[in-house]
Length: 428
Image 1 (cartoon, rainbow, N blue to C red):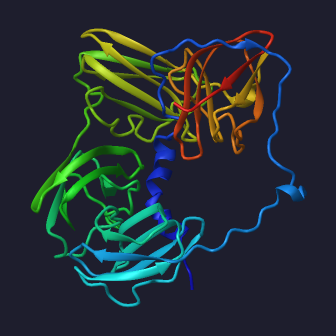
Image 2 (image 1 turned 180 degrees about the vertical axis):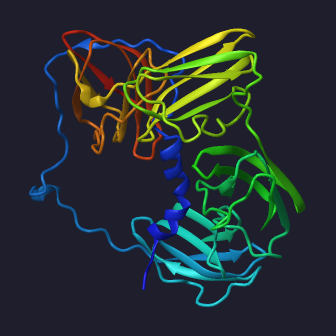
Image 3 (image 1 turned 90 degrees about the horizontal axis):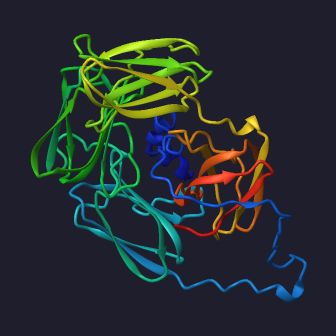
């Protein structure tokens, strides 16, 4: 019976799904300082095709011989027992067999013999918690893997580990999800609260090993209350306080008028001081700001950040502004351009970056958010091109690879009325 990698990683990736629902990784990227770029008038596209037909016998090569097996010495550097250990090729969808077959005590080691490859490695404690993980390790020779808390999907059992962390909720809002992950990890892991919640004014204790951690807390509407990185947890007792994010108040000395001109209903609206590292709770409080309606908030004078999502969890608009005492700021919500809307011109995008483009965001220079991925479910392979219909004007472009790494971020691209072409030439 195989253990599926997708099953182990599904919970580890829940925060990415939450982020897609509350703060999408792609959609929420903000437009930075512009850099001018020129677009050449449209010419006949030139397509270069390289490679050899599968039927070309002259290009056929013999299958490579199998490489000699390598030994991976796994050392349990943790102070807890390891009951499950998996090492398998990164190309596999399942982890395969458990290499422990029993218990690997703290300080003990075991040897796994496997063919050299790009490998994924995961270890779990005897409660089934993933406590160490390394993905896509290119191992071609004998090596040693020291199990450490580079990945911790859940808190340790009571009494385990060398540290405790008391989390106190002073946010004024119930916390339904909390993720605590070593800073060295690329994953948040499981929700540490499990089926419980942390009431406003309450506290809870987690058991873990001393390390540097990242913390994220979400309210019961999946709104982010706090996210903080590189928190040092020392041996012994530690405390972390989730504090309230200031927002609109009845006794404020300034006002914000929000008019929904986006053409779609707004279901989430965030207003927080620019000094805060998160937006805090939804200020609509489960209400909807219908297209064409407006709402007024009273708030203190100062610097503020605002963010709006439609009811499909898409970022509609965001701003930051300074407001003086006695002043009323007017925020007219606008919507990013719908890629399917078309226009009076066209833009040919040519990918000569050398890598596949999986996300392509094109937004008017006047917009403050990128909007939707113009490729949708498609990919723009290296060496290929595609053409979009849009209005003539000045646009910004963001291209990401399939791991959401930035390939190109270009501003003020002029698209003439007769159509134009833009080449993605190289990675940054």
